[in-house]
Image (cartoon, one colour):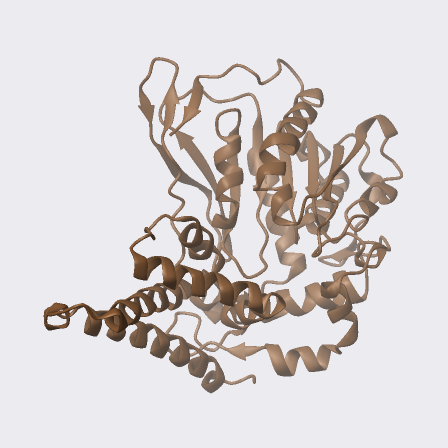
Length: 423
């Protein structure tokens, strides 16, 4: 599998399916086809429209498209992004809300690098903007990064997080979601030793695999059942000539997407069948529920091979974080060094990716942190997505997180608002 040919073959298959959809839509839309009622043409056009959009989205990074915020005086404030730290493999960006004064809550969202772009957290960002100054880690697609930029594994990821925390300052509150939870914890522990003044005020860890064996899932079972040699031979490919990262070894986003879809194949098949029916009946729209979800879900990015392989080997197989044996740049990180950063754990009762207990294991590692600085919340009936972007997040978890931030912030609480609504 580790050849440009296999990488280009997948892209050729995607491009061919996009072309087939476009051709079908154009053929069925040709004026002569409207000479009389012909349901077959309506179905062909609907299939083509859905197919073209589906395969086109797989190689396009979604826009943030953050809605405007409404000020107390009724004026609209446009939300823009500003690059605060620019790096080869990922940037630290800030969301600016018009000319609004800075909020007292400064939040760093640590986005996962697990096949999707940081825009997967768009709804999380929107929900926090009225009350917080929001920053996020915007990871780059590995296929677009030249080989000359070198490697990027979980140690490099941790070092990036440390630099981002230093840049934002000690009044920062970190929210790490899913995959980066153990690495955000490691970055904080390393800062506690090297640069204590740069530690964040609080650390909220949401649904991440600190100890995958605490409550195994299909994801952790897969990690244990395959050897590293099998993973490298079957999952790793070399970027083709079409992209700036030509020659770089990656875990392709298209391969990851195929894995995602195969886990719930029947559900996805039914969703696309139903959308084709809605398009044929004229009941669909560009921003209907199906398109809102799949425009983001289908937009995938490549991960560097070394990041993917080191995650499986060191986080899942070796359980280096869970055993307090994680090493960064030759230095063994000691989680007991975290003594002042408040830590909150959030888990979903029905999370089938990072099951309850996997994230909670972080509190056992923090032997130097007083119990008064530890907190945990298990959201009843919530799945993985719901604990950071769904109704459970908006209605229950978000208020708890804001209260936790306020309880562990120096100075005045961050409850004054200039924004009252989101359009």
